[in-house]
Amino acid sequence: MNTVTLNSHRLWAYLQLLRPANIVTAWADILAGFAASGILTIGSEINLVSLAWLLLATTGLYGGGIVFNDVFDAELDTQERPERPIPSHRASLRGATVLGSLLLSIGIVAASQVSWLSATLALGIAVAALLYNAVGKHHPIFGPINMGICRGGNLLLGVSVLPAMVEEYWFLALIPIVYIGAITMLSRGEVHGSKLSTGVVALLLIAIVIAGIFEMRLLTNYQLFTALPFLILFAMRVLLPLIKAVLEPTPEQIRIAVKAGVLSLIVLDTTVVAGFAGLLYGLLVLSLLPISIKLGQIFAVT
Image (cartoon, rainbow, N blue to C red; front, side):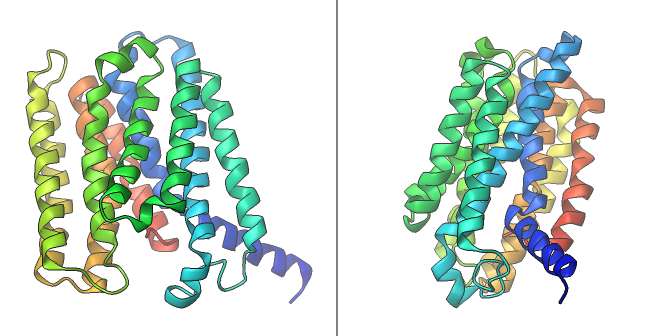
């Protein structure tokens, strides 16, 4: 194998560590928070600059967090997922550690270009991601909550484009916290299968998320009628594979349900965007879904 081919194989391995399809879902979190902040009604050029910084920030934070997932799981993956880049020796543990650290640093620095609150949230997300990878993932209750906090913080990072709005809309973080908590809980059965009770709890949590979106109609600046088609799409995409995984909790069915759950984050975020910013903005965010699905066919999602 010549040097060029070897380098391209290494580059591909490190790209696999990033799980690009998942990073696209993180962009949707930022866009949801951005819309909820109300800044889209201002429409100044600086808003687009701030949005670009926040998208770069979440790319670094999510990318770094997901790389460290493989770093901390390197020994376990040797037994359960030997095809992953680190146990297969296509990527080195040291190289992955450097990449993850660089990405997290980029995320924090990029967020600091928007506001100090954005930088603080980014730092909190980075710490929460490392805590999850090092400790949280091994805890049946704290782990899913920990992962949910990472995604809830990511949505608030989008809101932080207008720092004063974070205090007003902090509760929006509860949506991804509960949802990702459910998906993370379910994902524990990807290798050995899952208990029926775990699937039932995940199903109940997602039902709570759907009810929560529906109750956002009580907010004066949220239009449920505009968001409703996206909410129906979200429910169909998530509940159908999840119900199947509950009835047949095999590793294969759980992986299918988890993958659908992760990618459907974009649709969940679209319900937030459409309600706060209108149908057009909702459709723009939803356009990320086919991109994420396509990337999910090339790179691992779970």
